[in-house]
Length: 154
Image (cartoon, rainbow, N blue to C red; front, side):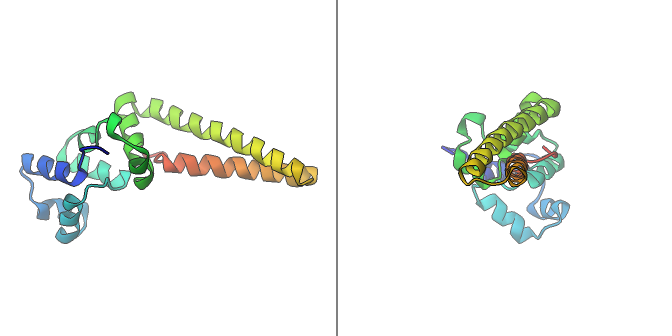
């Protein structure tokens, strides 16, 4: 990300609401020291924690996150996609974001299915083994991708 610092943004939003670090830590069920560290770091925590913080501060999740144009691959990978998934949910609504995430997961599952089919053919697997390999690859790809984007919660 270019200029966005999650911890600094969180500190400013918390102070604007007049909430102390101790109070935030208590509401999040973590130590004040751990919360203080969160405000000193620039990376975005997991989506569950971001949603809980937004709820405590009574703000939309989008206020805690960088603008979409600042989300880069490293940010999405570090947060398991929570930044982009939460932004999509916020901007498009949860049903639309769910359909987009599920559709993306299914598309990648199809690619994995075809790739496993090609590998099974090249390795001359039996029909049953090839079918098992294709469906295992498809299901694994879909599950990994869907979870990386934040799963059902976001």
